[in-house]
Length: 248
Image 1 (cartoon, rainbow, N blue to C red):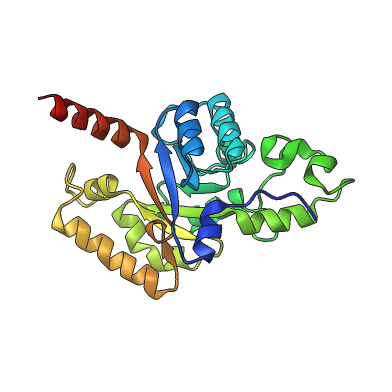
Image 2 (cartoon, rainbow, N blue to C red):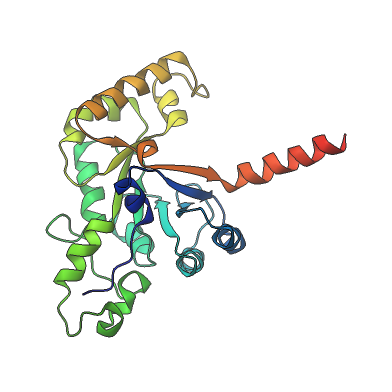
């Protein structure tokens, strides 16, 4: 039996529950360690598009998370294979692809995240593939087919729809196999709708609600159906505000 990392989010979903996670926009191994010690969390999410993450810091975050049995997901900066590999080869097991506006981009995202035959992910020799060691993989020799099949089952692929163009192309995007869930980018969507800086504008919310209904009607999921994530900055600021209020 090959050695496969379990995706805690998908495991919770199979129980009819949401995965609970901590979101980071900057490297903080200590925060991952703290929630790991506390227990109750299932995953850690790294914002690789707007956050301050180098390959070395991604590696460190994943290593600490693995030590506490936490799954790591990430929003990647771009949809290019080489960029996504920087995350997958470190051991990231869930990818949110930003700015997916077309079916072609949705397919590119899937191909970068999933091994054949479901995609075209490149095989790496880093921590994500147990350094390509047959003993660590528990799949001796050079055969990797079973590992690739089982890893595909644990990979979470999500597409971020954040422009009016994406909404217009929704039917074609939904026709692409291999995407587990969809997410919004309300600020960028508002800007694309001629409402910059107004993510809570009624027209923006109405457009999101309409598209969510279409996604659900197609038997597909939104990311919020699968998981709930709280950001570390929010925890710090809420705690700091609470402390200041208590002193006043």
